[in-house]
Image (tube, rainbow, N blue to C red; front, side, top):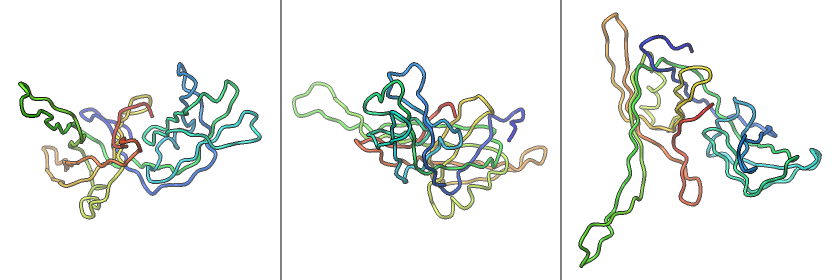
Length: 215
C-alpha cells in the first residue's frame, strides 16, 4: 500500500500461520559466524507459538538439528556454535503472511518497566530493581476496520507498520482494548486504536513482543 503525504506509513496485519519447510538461512554480514537470517523475506515473520527447527549441513546432503534461538519478529537465527565457513543452514516453522489494510497518520509507542524496592531496615537510600516490562500505544489512520473483530474477542494480533520499500518497520503483538471513531474535515473517517502489548515467552525469562528492524 503506497504511503501518501500526511501519513507516516501503512498498516499490515497477519493472517493465519502457514507452515514452511527447509527455508534457506544466510550468514549475517560482520557477525561472529553464529548469526544467520531467513533468506526469503516472506518467511521472516514467524508464528511464536509454532516450533522452529534449525538444521545445519556441511555437505548439503546430510542435515542435522542444532541448538539455536530464532527471532520470530525478523527471522534471525542465532546458533550456539559457528557451523563452519562452508556450512549451510535451513529453518522450518510457520510464517505469518500479512495484508496491508490501512494508512496510518500517527503512531505512538510507550515502553515501561515495573520497579520494585529492595531496601531493608537501616538502609539510607532506596534501592530498586527492574522486573516486568510492558508496552502500549495508539495509532490513528484511515479504515482501521481490521481491529473491529480484535476488539470484540480480545485475541492478540500481529501488526506491522512501515513506510515503504527499504525502510524499517515496527512489528508487534498487540491487544486492542479501545477503538474510537472521528469524522475529520474533508469527510475523512478516521479511527484511533489504543493497543497494549502481548508477549510470548521465549525461554530464560525472555519474551517476544515488539521491535523495529529491516524487513
